[in-house]
Length: 438
Ligand code: NDP
Image 1: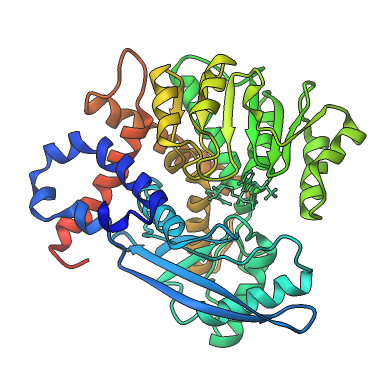
Image 2: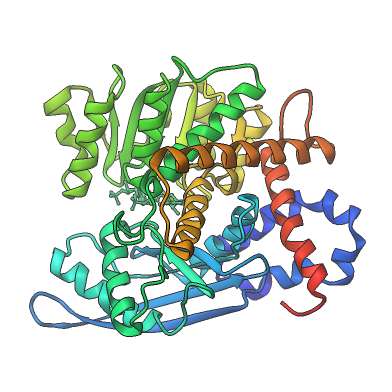
């Protein structure tokens, strides 16, 4: 821990896993003998590089880029690329570490990785974004390949950015093998990839509710963020009969007590695509714009935090409990601080960590990889059906592990411990089989 004191997000993610897998570790002395945990907390490698690009004024700009290839025991490294000024090695290592277990939970053959840059897409022109994406891939292409490491999108990287990066990769290698997922449909992308993370989180929620003999219909849902994950979580929740009261961004929260229907959600998608303010919603549909506020002081039944890491602190967690939140499914990666997690669990709020609840995105990315390999594409309905099964499997295996290792208390399922143990066991067993290589 002392060695990585300067990487707080990474330490936070490692501690959570370390504490919750204890019962599993004790049941498997071979993990201790082969130092599985010590091996898993050190990435296979971290590649760091410089990106030179030119802005619209013709000035040279310099940014930093990284790819963390964390662990490939189960398959090629797989995980998104984030473009945001807060990107550091610590953030990418926490994301890459969580990705190992999330990917294992999907049951698909993918290892864990993550990458990105401290480039800030906000306020950049379309041309600048394109030039940056080209320049980024010009460096990254040395280290990725469809069988080695397959990146995808994340904060600041959507379909547009993925397409620019894919174009540069194709140009440099003359390969059309689908080295990055989240590509456009028609040139290697999978139907449903865009929707997968948000939809998957709501499918996971449905299983959580069913385990408590409850149902999503009529439930009041608070969503944070207004990006890819948030708006698709809001959309699926609405489709299943829930009332979506909020979305938010770095400027504040949009609150609509009537609920956000498909027309409103479509409007929000377009608004975000054009980088326009969420606040303009109020002029079109009514509701309230709560500048500089988070959604958690509003009464609701379900929270789906889907913006960024550590967006929910202990005070926010207290507000959630006071305001009646009974279920939390993390759409974002590590949106609750360690203290917030302790607080909501103490108050028996049913809590699903991102590793389990937001695994739908990477699962459909893995389906995109297999569609690229066989060069045959599935329909929206086929992919959606696979996604539903995968999310149910993740839920059921986490719930079963929680029960098996004595973590379920009077019907309260410890999804955090369950998910960590299932994901960890799959990777650890592969490492045991490999001996001391990997
Ligand atoms: P997007 O870039 O599409 O959207 C991010 C949203 O979060 C924006 O509304 C943004 O607001 C808001 N946001 C970002 N930082 C902050 C902050 N510090 N405070 C308040 N709001 C903030 O990203 P995604 O939807 O793709 O990703 C969101 C989360 O989900 C991340 O944690 C990501 O790692 C995780 N995730 C994403 C997956 C995917 O498939 N895309 C898969 C699994 C996890 P603003 O526009 O104002 O910056």
